[in-house]
Image 1: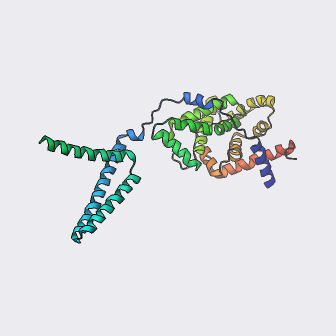
Image 2: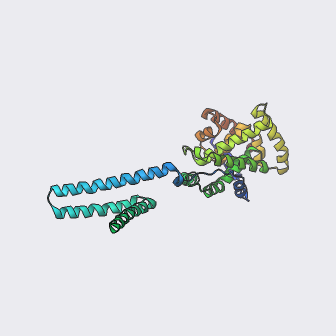
Length: 126
Length: 180
């Protein structure tokens, strides 16, 4: 029985054809209907999700800095506060660069620049 | 790893709207799908190409419904199997499918006599379900649970189809002096 099984497998495997493409793929692709899959980045829910994520990230970072600042002040130890603050800022910038995707990062940087620019403009205007 | 690369290609089509991902999937699986149809249609290359094309078009239209619970090839062959049975139904809408397949195979046998391909004559001895199960199991190397998912048959039924097909093929091979 096992021998039969081996023989049948060998018989079918030997005759297993590797069919060449011969233009089949291009013919098939020509017949594909025009179904436009909307890219993920063009979907509203995706944009909303990214905005929520960016906002959450900002809040988390802000709370992190605030916490270390409050802790430092409460200990009345200014050098430690500065050290901790710099450490936390550096660590979070590195974490931000490694975890956040480029468009979000660029978006954050641009919004900070926009905010600073607006402040300067308003002060000069006054 | 292969499953992951297929999922990445599917994601390229459905999430990024990049159709080139599907080009690569067609290129990768065209041989398997066309061979599957060639075995089911007794070597009718033209018909196999038409059915394969329809299979890929249906796969493209339903790409979003691919859940990755099985491999992409299993999912594709399930669509192919349905396309083949729809084709048989269109030939003889009111009669039994096995009967339609039998008529289909006898016309193909005439063509096969000219080619004298021993694979075709061996597969012609089997019923449609036996042929499907045996080619999926031995040629496409699908597991029994995957064959069940492709054909919609129960695993027990597939095992009995395989056993009957093996008996018939074993007799054929002995009679034709294969493996001596």
